[in-house]
View 1 (spheres, rainbow, N blue to C red):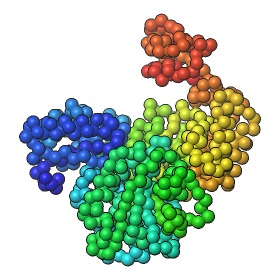
View 2: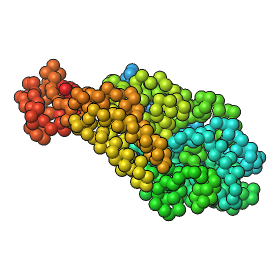
View 3: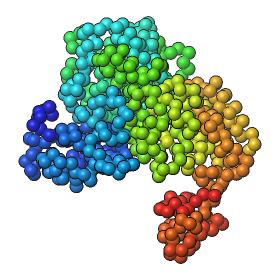
View 4: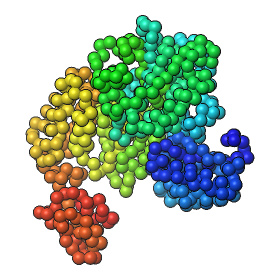
Length: 600
């Protein structure tokens, strides 16, 4: 069966982690059973695809021949999809996306606001191909860049092309990829390695997971091209073991690439040899750092080592090693295919191409977005993300993972590129965006991220190990009403010491959440320390709940659910919270549909 046969209808069902959790595999089963019962299996194909990004509204089904995009699909909807859409060409209106503003149903994917400002380059095949079938990847132009690179370009020409494209690393600091490749190629030594970092450990980030699950061949193709350019004959993909679907799809993709002659000895009869192995990490956050990752690959404890000698000269087993994030590798075939000049047309002067972000938090449309470098935060959060849930006030967005910074409302129109983020005290990182609203306490946010980093620190160097522990203790005291006058100054002093003295980038960037929240939300720190108040109503010892008499309708939910019996009131009458009994658990606050429970 060929999906290019125009007589065959194709229903593409997202089957990556998010949609699987929503029942996508059950939808596939329902399709198979229904098509068999109706004797339609030779006329309709159901294809498992990668992520389309709109994770908030999954499971997703796209029927491109009918220009129909369905969201929040359930197995019971399958008979109607087959009858109405695939047979009669009519949309099932209840499954169409409902616009958040106009409340109108939208039929076409391209008309949904979430997709309008996206530019799908790295994700261009996601949602179209079955990631377990190499023929699908080839049919969409896959491995054409490899053929071009190995048959008509020299290693020097490939590196020059990557340099001219302006591609920067997508996994952290944004180091120019071409410069790294050149340094590794010029490093002395016969044995060299190419490594893909798929150890995605940032809270709320799932870009790399979706890419490995939904388009593994793009990563492999990029690594083969990189290996040829650098002079490496062995590659490794480091994936955390918590990503079983990614490991499964990458393993299958490597086997298929070998069987097609794209991996192994004498690739495409060019005399070039390269093979790739998968290594599964145990989930330590610090193993996202290059030297810790290489230690782990060697079978050692995953902890960083000093970088007075760069890994491009002495990395894995003390051999020249080129490590790039999986998204960086997936950009390589695009650059070779279309050329550096065309690739560089997208983005800003110093940040080229597109970037994939995971948009999560208090935003209406959560999911994955691929946008051109230089787009503003406002466009991502409001035009693509649909704004803040329940029309609350935007407060901050945390970028770059737990070591990134929190960016306030006043910077909402800043451009998303490496240099702009650095200027405001944050970083691109791997691409996580956590949106926060008026009910987020920025001191508590800083405490959360410092606590995460404290537990994930390898403990090898004192500045990081003890600095994070002291920071977390100070922030905990502030949040619990025990803050002291000099705490802000002490946090700033600790931060600068850690930046200067820590062994690796984890310790050096760990203070970012503290420094950025002090920089932009110093008044919240002062309110906690001097006034003993948490304006957001998060830090339990620094606020109390009360019920607004104008909003309370006497539904009794808060009274029935309170574990301390602190709420009193008759049905359909005003309820009251006894502050002496209230423990500040927040159950009444979270359950009140009238939003009558308020913070004082």
